[in-house]
Image (tube, rainbow, N blue to C red; front, top):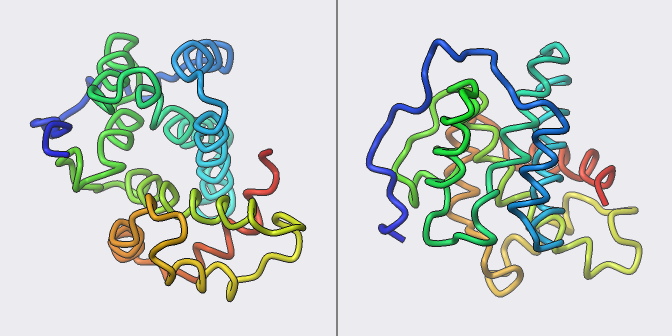
Length: 200
């Protein structure tokens, strides 16, 4: 995975602070770059979780909620068609569009072991925290007859301990992300269970 190292720690230009894509622009980029329906769902789920967290836990206004959602929505935008350029291509695209550097940096730091960029801001840390855990919770919903309905913390934690379940989900990343965000894993799981079903 070292081939994905970004080999830099600054992203975007500070003069672009506050600049975002419109919903239409974000949707066009999203649908053009991401063709895989499963990946689209994952990215929408992470974007939704980011928006909800920004609103409910960080108490941010609508503009900042969209900034958080945008980081989640586009964090894997280049993974589908350009896996060898994962993170690098979407970062460069957003830089050419003069997007807020905080959004770009959050995307750059959503996998510190892979991209070599450490999560620093609250947005960075929450995107990293939601990414893998969101995927595991969704995988668990797919194996349950009732899906998300009636899902509880105990069931998710049981699957989390089963290394063979959703084996591509990094438990190390989940543990590291929770520690960096200063959050209990249980709190994050419960938040995902409560909010993720809104995205199908």
